[in-house]
Length: 384
Image 1 (cartoon, rainbow, N blue to C red):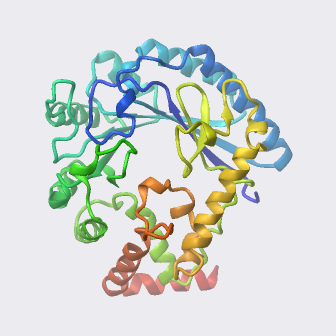
Image 2 (image 1 turned 180 degrees about the horizontal axis):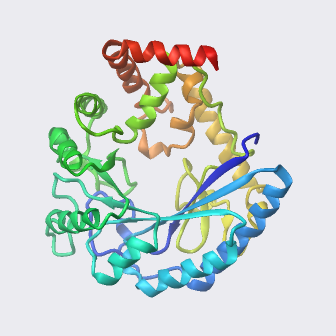
């Protein structure tokens, strides 16, 4: 890899245990499971990553940044002291040899004084999951969590904690996209919309499914709301789509396809330490590239399963992206790093990229609204 700085995101499924029962959650069968990673297992993971990437940086003349994303279940169900200790262990093991950051993805139902302090000084960023509209994020008694989470969110924002949010688009809120947008706009919060995908549990998401047409209409509406609104950054994944559209209009070259053998951008670590590349079937033992608690990371990246994962990512791009007008400014990551369950199929095994029509829509909107900016992009690229 030619870049002197490279980033690996490590999604840490510290526990599946959760205080909510969101009706579309892909971990639903395990939300009552109290099993959690231990401090010693996390220490083993840190040492494994440290030894691998310090050696890799010396070999490649590069600088690696590791982004730990603490996930669940509900990660804040673990004791505050657990995080205090593991973050201290992490700092001791990595020192200044690698750039390290930590974020946590939470439903924010729990926010006592200890957890508020932890979110303020223990993590670099906090991700909050709430749908604003829909009533699908419920507690064990079936009561909607929105009011409580909103109050806790506003308290975090008032305390100056860096916060981003995720809202799942379902049949329950697809009609209320503007309300969702205005909720975050009024708080000046970046957010992501995540269209509902099949969890694999028969019938679980059926009542809440949205069609591809509904999804595309909602994303186009969000584009319009952003262009006429006050949020500086469009909601994800539109932020990425806008960059692709801008490069397309400017005739600028985008990122090349990223071969996982050269660099793996994301790894998901299940509670038992088994690891999965993003885009392959998470949780299925046959697709685990190894166990980060016990297997050297270099061996995980050179094993048969990892090679199979790399080939599958290449196949997704070959089937879907090579003929796309935006491929040269996208690089194929929209499908290479996306699980099949997060995309619809055409009935013949080909995934349908929701990015393509939305990028085309954005390009037309930008072309019509900001022609001077398009010309400036072109001039900048020509002089680069």
